Length: 74
Length: 247
Image 1 (cartoon, rainbow over the protein chains, first blue to last red):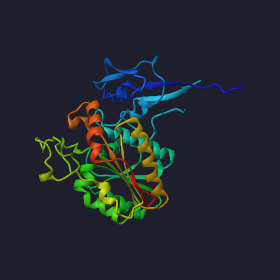
Image 2: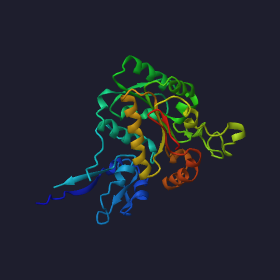
Image 3: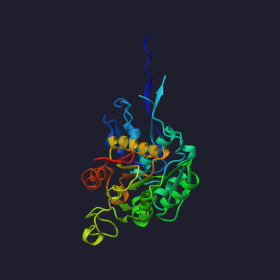
Image 4: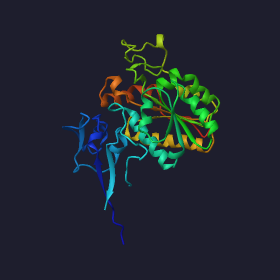
Protein backbone atom coordinates (compact mmCIF):
# COMPACT_ATOMS: atom_id res chain seq x y z
CA UNK A 1 0.00 0.00 0.00
CA UNK A 2 1.50 3.32 -1.01
CA UNK A 3 1.14 6.39 1.13
CA UNK A 4 -0.76 9.15 -0.64
CA UNK A 5 1.36 12.26 -0.99
CA UNK A 6 -0.30 15.37 0.37
CA UNK A 7 -0.65 18.36 -1.93
CA UNK A 8 1.16 21.55 -0.88
CA UNK A 9 -0.13 24.99 -1.71
CA UNK A 10 1.15 28.52 -1.10
CA UNK A 11 -1.13 30.94 0.69
CA UNK A 12 -0.41 34.64 0.94
CA UNK A 13 -1.53 37.51 3.16
CA UNK A 14 -1.44 40.38 0.69
CA UNK A 15 -2.03 43.06 3.29
CA UNK A 16 1.25 42.21 5.04
CA UNK A 17 3.31 42.76 1.89
CA UNK A 18 5.50 45.86 1.63
CA UNK A 19 6.50 45.18 -1.96
CA UNK A 20 10.25 44.76 -1.35
CA UNK A 21 10.47 42.12 -4.12
CA UNK A 22 12.94 39.83 -2.32
CA UNK A 23 10.60 36.91 -3.19
CA UNK A 24 10.47 37.90 -6.86
CA UNK A 25 14.29 38.05 -6.97
CA UNK A 26 14.70 34.70 -5.19
CA UNK A 27 11.92 32.55 -6.73
CA UNK A 28 13.66 29.77 -8.71
CA UNK A 29 10.53 29.15 -10.79
CA UNK A 30 10.08 32.86 -11.61
CA UNK A 31 6.50 32.47 -10.48
CA UNK A 32 6.23 35.73 -8.55
CA UNK A 33 5.60 39.17 -10.00
CA UNK A 34 4.45 42.52 -8.72
CA UNK A 35 0.74 43.28 -8.90
CA UNK A 36 -0.76 46.46 -10.27
CA UNK A 37 -3.16 46.38 -7.30
CA UNK A 38 -2.33 48.18 -4.04
CA UNK A 39 -2.92 46.66 -0.59
CA UNK A 40 -4.27 48.29 2.58
CA UNK A 41 -0.79 49.59 3.48
CA UNK A 42 -0.44 51.26 0.10
CA UNK A 43 2.12 48.90 -1.41
CA UNK A 44 1.93 47.01 -4.68
CA UNK A 45 1.82 43.47 -3.36
CA UNK A 46 3.27 40.37 -5.01
CA UNK A 47 1.30 37.85 -7.06
CA UNK A 48 2.04 34.14 -7.48
CA UNK A 49 1.49 32.35 -10.78
CA UNK A 50 0.24 29.06 -9.33
CA UNK A 51 0.81 27.27 -12.63
CA UNK A 52 4.56 27.93 -12.38
CA UNK A 53 4.84 27.57 -8.57
CA UNK A 54 6.54 24.41 -7.31
CA UNK A 55 5.77 25.17 -3.59
CA UNK A 56 9.49 24.95 -2.82
CA UNK A 57 9.15 27.42 0.07
CA UNK A 58 11.88 29.89 -0.93
CA UNK A 59 9.36 32.77 -0.78
CA UNK A 60 8.45 31.82 2.80
CA UNK A 61 12.13 31.82 3.79
CA UNK A 62 13.15 35.14 2.24
CA UNK A 63 10.02 37.20 2.95
CA UNK A 64 10.70 39.76 5.72
CA UNK A 65 6.98 40.39 6.23
CA UNK A 66 5.52 36.90 6.73
CA UNK A 67 3.35 37.08 3.60
CA UNK A 68 3.65 33.45 2.44
CA UNK A 69 2.87 30.13 4.07
CA UNK A 70 3.19 26.65 2.61
CA UNK A 71 0.36 24.42 3.75
CA UNK A 72 -0.60 20.84 3.04
CA UNK A 73 -4.11 20.00 1.88
CA UNK A 74 -5.68 16.56 1.79
CA UNK B 1 8.72 18.20 2.77
CA UNK B 2 6.69 19.75 5.51
CA UNK B 3 4.47 22.74 5.96
CA UNK B 4 6.00 26.15 6.52
CA UNK B 5 3.85 28.25 8.78
CA UNK B 6 4.61 31.62 10.35
CA UNK B 7 5.74 31.06 13.98
CA UNK B 8 3.07 31.90 16.57
CA UNK B 9 5.71 33.85 18.53
CA UNK B 10 5.39 36.60 15.91
CA UNK B 11 2.23 37.99 17.47
CA UNK B 12 1.88 41.01 15.17
CA UNK B 13 3.08 42.20 11.77
CA UNK B 14 6.52 43.74 12.05
CA UNK B 15 7.09 47.48 11.79
CA UNK B 16 10.26 47.52 9.73
CA UNK B 17 10.79 49.26 6.38
CA UNK B 18 10.29 47.34 3.09
CA UNK B 19 13.16 44.92 2.48
CA UNK B 20 14.64 45.25 5.99
CA UNK B 21 16.50 42.14 7.13
CA UNK B 22 15.20 42.43 10.69
CA UNK B 23 11.90 40.81 9.65
CA UNK B 24 13.68 37.72 8.34
CA UNK B 25 15.93 37.49 11.42
CA UNK B 26 12.90 37.84 13.72
CA UNK B 27 11.22 34.94 11.94
CA UNK B 28 14.30 32.71 12.01
CA UNK B 29 14.83 33.43 15.73
CA UNK B 30 11.15 32.71 16.46
CA UNK B 31 11.40 29.41 14.57
CA UNK B 32 14.48 28.37 16.55
CA UNK B 33 12.93 29.28 19.93
CA UNK B 34 9.74 27.37 19.07
CA UNK B 35 11.62 24.31 17.80
CA UNK B 36 13.71 24.27 20.99
CA UNK B 37 10.63 24.99 23.19
CA UNK B 38 12.26 28.07 24.71
CA UNK B 39 9.63 30.75 23.98
CA UNK B 40 8.16 30.75 27.49
CA UNK B 41 11.56 30.89 29.23
CA UNK B 42 13.26 33.37 26.89
CA UNK B 43 14.06 36.90 28.07
CA UNK B 44 15.31 39.35 25.48
CA UNK B 45 17.27 42.51 26.11
CA UNK B 46 17.11 45.32 23.58
CA UNK B 47 18.35 48.88 23.76
CA UNK B 48 17.69 51.60 21.16
CA UNK B 49 17.39 51.48 17.40
CA UNK B 50 15.32 49.67 14.78
CA UNK B 51 15.88 46.40 16.69
CA UNK B 52 13.74 47.53 19.62
CA UNK B 53 10.65 47.79 17.37
CA UNK B 54 10.35 44.02 17.82
CA UNK B 55 9.36 44.20 21.49
CA UNK B 56 5.76 44.89 20.38
CA UNK B 57 5.63 42.13 17.79
CA UNK B 58 7.80 39.29 19.13
CA UNK B 59 6.05 37.32 21.85
CA UNK B 60 8.73 36.74 24.47
CA UNK B 61 9.53 38.75 27.59
CA UNK B 62 11.63 41.86 26.99
CA UNK B 63 13.64 44.41 28.90
CA UNK B 64 14.66 47.63 27.19
CA UNK B 65 18.04 48.87 28.39
CA UNK B 66 19.60 52.31 28.07
CA UNK B 67 21.19 52.95 24.67
CA UNK B 68 23.88 50.31 24.01
CA UNK B 69 23.57 48.64 27.39
CA UNK B 70 21.58 45.55 26.39
CA UNK B 71 24.50 43.18 27.07
CA UNK B 72 25.05 44.56 30.59
CA UNK B 73 21.35 44.17 31.40
CA UNK B 74 21.28 40.64 29.92
CA UNK B 75 24.27 39.65 32.10
CA UNK B 76 22.39 40.82 35.19
CA UNK B 77 19.23 38.94 34.21
CA UNK B 78 21.15 35.73 33.53
CA UNK B 79 22.97 35.90 36.87
CA UNK B 80 19.73 36.14 38.85
CA UNK B 81 17.69 33.86 36.57
CA UNK B 82 20.15 31.24 35.30
CA UNK B 83 17.32 28.87 34.33
CA UNK B 84 16.04 31.29 31.67
CA UNK B 85 17.34 31.66 28.13
CA UNK B 86 18.67 35.24 27.98
CA UNK B 87 19.64 36.98 24.77
CA UNK B 88 20.40 40.42 23.41
CA UNK B 89 19.15 41.67 20.05
CA UNK B 90 20.80 44.85 18.83
CA UNK B 91 21.82 46.70 15.71
CA UNK B 92 25.43 47.52 14.88
CA UNK B 93 25.20 51.16 15.92
CA UNK B 94 23.72 50.24 19.28
CA UNK B 95 26.03 47.34 20.12
CA UNK B 96 29.27 48.35 18.38
CA UNK B 97 29.28 52.15 18.75
CA UNK B 98 27.37 53.29 21.83
CA UNK B 99 27.51 49.92 23.60
CA UNK B 100 30.85 48.58 22.38
CA UNK B 101 32.25 48.37 25.92
CA UNK B 102 29.28 46.41 27.27
CA UNK B 103 29.27 44.07 24.27
CA UNK B 104 33.01 43.36 24.58
CA UNK B 105 33.11 42.92 28.35
CA UNK B 106 30.23 40.46 28.34
CA UNK B 107 32.41 38.37 26.00
CA UNK B 108 35.60 38.98 28.02
CA UNK B 109 33.84 37.57 31.09
CA UNK B 110 32.38 34.73 28.97
CA UNK B 111 28.93 35.45 30.39
CA UNK B 112 26.43 32.68 29.63
CA UNK B 113 24.25 34.83 27.34
CA UNK B 114 23.62 34.90 23.59
CA UNK B 115 24.05 38.06 21.53
CA UNK B 116 22.50 38.74 18.14
CA UNK B 117 23.98 41.74 16.35
CA UNK B 118 22.31 42.91 13.15
CA UNK B 119 24.90 44.66 11.00
CA UNK B 120 23.52 46.87 8.23
CA UNK B 121 26.45 49.29 8.26
CA UNK B 122 24.42 52.36 9.14
CA UNK B 123 22.36 54.01 11.88
CA UNK B 124 18.91 53.13 10.51
CA UNK B 125 16.35 54.53 12.93
CA UNK B 126 17.94 57.98 13.20
CA UNK B 127 18.01 58.47 9.44
CA UNK B 128 21.11 56.85 7.99
CA UNK B 129 24.18 58.27 9.72
CA UNK B 130 27.65 56.71 9.42
CA UNK B 131 28.26 53.80 11.82
CA UNK B 132 31.55 52.15 12.87
CA UNK B 133 30.63 49.34 10.46
CA UNK B 134 30.06 51.61 7.43
CA UNK B 135 32.25 50.63 4.49
CA UNK B 136 35.00 52.91 3.10
CA UNK B 137 33.43 55.23 0.53
CA UNK B 138 29.90 54.58 1.81
CA UNK B 139 27.68 57.63 1.44
CA UNK B 140 25.62 58.41 4.51
CA UNK B 141 23.98 61.58 5.82
CA UNK B 142 27.11 62.29 7.92
CA UNK B 143 29.55 61.26 5.19
CA UNK B 144 27.92 62.67 2.05
CA UNK B 145 31.18 62.42 0.09
CA UNK B 146 31.71 58.81 1.21
CA UNK B 147 33.31 57.46 4.41
CA UNK B 148 37.00 58.37 4.57
CA UNK B 149 38.84 55.65 6.56
CA UNK B 150 41.73 58.05 7.31
CA UNK B 151 39.25 60.18 9.28
CA UNK B 152 36.66 57.66 10.47
CA UNK B 153 38.64 54.41 10.61
CA UNK B 154 38.19 51.06 8.92
CA UNK B 155 34.90 49.13 9.44
CA UNK B 156 34.78 47.61 12.91
CA UNK B 157 34.93 43.83 12.68
CA UNK B 158 33.54 42.44 15.94
CA UNK B 159 34.42 38.86 14.98
CA UNK B 160 38.12 39.77 14.76
CA UNK B 161 37.87 41.59 18.11
CA UNK B 162 36.38 38.56 19.85
CA UNK B 163 38.24 35.78 18.10
CA UNK B 164 40.95 35.48 20.77
CA UNK B 165 38.53 35.48 23.70
CA UNK B 166 37.61 32.27 25.54
CA UNK B 167 33.96 32.32 24.44
CA UNK B 168 31.72 29.42 23.43
CA UNK B 169 30.38 30.40 20.02
CA UNK B 170 31.12 33.02 17.39
CA UNK B 171 29.65 33.20 13.91
CA UNK B 172 28.65 35.63 11.22
CA UNK B 173 25.66 34.95 9.01
CA UNK B 174 23.72 36.91 6.44
CA UNK B 175 20.18 37.31 5.15
CA UNK B 176 21.39 38.19 1.65
CA UNK B 177 20.05 35.07 -0.05
CA UNK B 178 17.93 31.98 0.53
CA UNK B 179 20.98 29.76 1.12
CA UNK B 180 22.49 32.18 3.62
CA UNK B 181 19.22 32.37 5.56
CA UNK B 182 19.23 28.56 5.87
CA UNK B 183 22.82 28.72 7.20
CA UNK B 184 21.90 31.56 9.55
CA UNK B 185 19.26 29.39 11.21
CA UNK B 186 21.95 26.77 11.87
CA UNK B 187 24.21 29.41 13.47
CA UNK B 188 21.42 30.78 15.66
CA UNK B 189 20.49 27.28 16.80
CA UNK B 190 24.11 26.51 17.68
CA UNK B 191 24.48 29.76 19.66
CA UNK B 192 21.27 29.06 21.59
CA UNK B 193 22.36 25.48 22.30
CA UNK B 194 25.67 26.69 23.75
CA UNK B 195 23.88 28.80 26.33
CA UNK B 196 21.40 26.06 27.24
CA UNK B 197 24.31 23.67 27.80
CA UNK B 198 26.04 26.30 29.97
CA UNK B 199 29.08 26.62 27.73
CA UNK B 200 29.16 30.42 27.81
CA UNK B 201 28.96 33.47 25.60
CA UNK B 202 27.68 33.10 22.06
CA UNK B 203 27.51 35.81 19.43
CA UNK B 204 25.98 35.73 15.96
CA UNK B 205 26.55 38.81 13.81
CA UNK B 206 24.05 39.00 10.97
CA UNK B 207 24.64 41.01 7.80
CA UNK B 208 21.40 42.68 6.79
CA UNK B 209 20.26 45.02 4.03
CA UNK B 210 18.85 48.49 4.74
CA UNK B 211 17.47 49.51 1.32
CA UNK B 212 15.78 52.61 2.78
CA UNK B 213 18.93 54.24 4.17
CA UNK B 214 21.30 52.78 1.59
CA UNK B 215 18.93 54.45 -0.93
CA UNK B 216 18.89 51.32 -3.07
CA UNK B 217 16.33 48.97 -4.56
CA UNK B 218 16.12 45.50 -3.01
CA UNK B 219 18.08 43.99 -5.88
CA UNK B 220 20.71 46.74 -5.59
CA UNK B 221 20.99 46.18 -1.83
CA UNK B 222 21.41 42.41 -2.23
CA UNK B 223 24.05 42.92 -4.94
CA UNK B 224 25.86 45.42 -2.69
CA UNK B 225 25.91 42.85 0.11
CA UNK B 226 27.32 40.14 -2.15
CA UNK B 227 29.83 42.35 -3.96
CA UNK B 228 31.05 44.69 -1.20
CA UNK B 229 29.82 43.99 2.34
CA UNK B 230 30.94 40.35 2.40
CA UNK B 231 34.48 41.35 1.37
CA UNK B 232 34.83 43.21 4.66
CA UNK B 233 32.68 40.87 6.72
CA UNK B 234 33.22 37.24 5.67
CA UNK B 235 30.60 34.80 6.93
CA UNK B 236 31.02 31.47 8.69
CA UNK B 237 31.52 29.91 12.13
CA UNK B 238 34.67 31.15 13.86
CA UNK B 239 34.39 29.52 17.30
CA UNK B 240 32.34 26.36 17.89
CA UNK B 241 31.82 24.98 21.40
CA UNK B 242 34.84 26.97 22.59
CA UNK B 243 37.10 25.65 19.83
CA UNK B 244 38.53 28.02 17.22
CA UNK B 245 37.88 27.05 13.61
CA UNK B 246 39.69 28.11 10.44
CA UNK B 247 36.66 29.83 8.85
